[in-house]
Image (cartoon, rainbow, N blue to C red):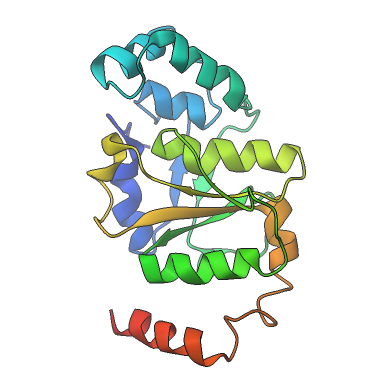
Length: 204
């Protein structure tokens, strides 16, 4: 497979078009992408790069503090496969489900998430790269059998590869196993309010 120079989110046009993507340590060119997908430990240059060049944190120390708290899990798998849900035969070995969502879609996803969860952190929006907000957070949440979901793709470095009206919404499998059984009882099923929003989504 051809190496991806820079941010691997530039490959997401293929995903949106219905084509699966496979990532590996050899294929990912970005040091942050390689780290946050669990294929490598942190490159020693990353804290200075994030603080001094990208200017996303005031200091290297703040970057290191974030990385320590992020507790990124190193994978033993050779590949990270990203596939449209319609291409999956089952959910075996799936880490999480993520949506590339418009504001209307986020409304539905948030309503579904809040249906059976009153926790203040039922939905979280955290600092991080595009890859950390989708992949690292889902992996860590699964390891804790947690219930949090994550809004992401705020990182300006990834935004250039994402449509202007799109954010990500990630549901780790530890939470999706519960939510799967609530969708038919939630407002997403046969309510006038969501029906109108769904019509608007379908027109876009």
